[in-house]
Amino acid sequence: TTTDTTQAEVKADGQVDASGNVAATIPEKAVEDAIKKAEDEAKKNGTSNNGITLVLNVNTGGKAASSVTVNLPKVTQEMIIDKKIVNTVIVVDNPNIRVGMDLTAIREINRQAQADVNITAARMDNSKLTGDAKAAIGSRPVFDLSASYGTNRVQNFGAGTVCITIPYTLQKGEAAGGLYAVYVDSNGNVSY
Image (tube, rainbow, N blue to C red):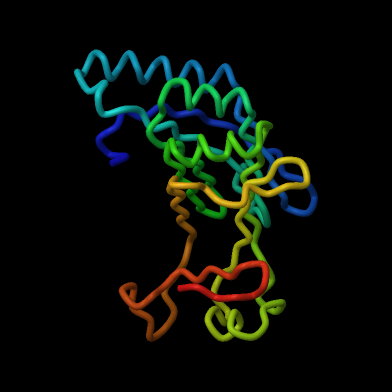
């Protein structure tokens, strides 16, 4: 699990445009330095076998972002693969979104893209929902999440795992145990 690993943390400031879109690029040198520091710490603590979790913290400067795009350069993907980083977690402060990818998912992203990849989380307008999606989601928050390179999107993560955490405040009459994440595909089909 992530808690058993040694954390390598990289902080990046997102650039916010007039529309509230945040873009951040994770500097290769900062990733390299953070991994080295975590490797040294794990060796010192005798926890090297547990692996390393790379945490990429993106600061939006207190502005509420309508979309967040984090660029994961090809060279950084390859460093993650080469160093066998167990988990890579992108954390955005506002909105409070976390995207966690295991090593297998990063390998698959790299295999498909063979290029820099943009991980994007964009707030969607609920009024554009129709049919089953509208019935399932109602007024709850909707995000378009993607991993893209050029005009293409990563279509799947193979045997890899991607874990998404998005902010949500329980509404009147809702219990945490009764909530589901709803996935709507490009054809409008709903999966719970």
